[in-house]
Amino acid sequence: AEYGEFQTFQHYFKRINLRKMHIRCATTSDLINMQHCNLLCLPENYQMKYYFYHGLSWPQLSFVAVDEKDKICGYVLAKMEEEPDEVPHGHITSLAVKRSHRRLGLAKKLMDQASRAMVESFSARYVSLHVRISNRAALSLYKHVLKFQVDDIEPKYYADGEDAYAMKKDLSHLLEETSDTRQFIENLGKSLFADPQLQTEESGVEEKLDKLTLNPTVCDSDDAAS
Image (tube, rainbow, N blue to C red; front, side, top):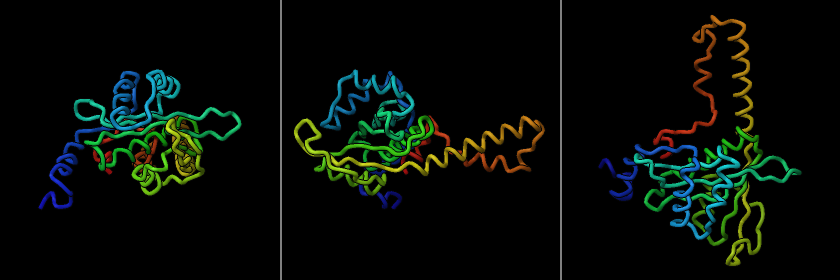
């Protein structure tokens, strides 16, 4: 009865094991294993130098999901677009979760972390990505779970000639949250500087600090499962 809400024993035990997992910012030492995960999961593959290009240019934007042995079971490879005449926006180059760890919410958590990092580090207004028009599972994830919208169709985007949906997600709500958080921290710093004996219990600072949304580099597994 305890596992009745899960489809199989395997799914039940995967959820238990998920408690030993966490998501963290990718490092250069992760790039080879990210490429390996990509080769296992996706038809779109990249040379190692492309991973280093992302990791060295935007080290704060890519994330990995790892198990208790620090083995990578999913990743998101992200960057900022560099057109100077456009508003700041990020792009998801690649997202993959190993088959053994799918349907557990890892893809959403990875994408949420990358999107927040784009906003906090570069004030991104939106994030974009491409997906094959035949990839119904990915399209459903992006549209219904991650709330991306189809912006355009790019003919023959992929090497085999298949078209791609160009999708976007507005990040203005995260930008407002980040701005409010930074303003709160700035005001708090000024108050503490003016009055070092400020009592946090009386001013409600503790409660406000609990609501801060600055991007963590590590999240609990319970969050990753949501």
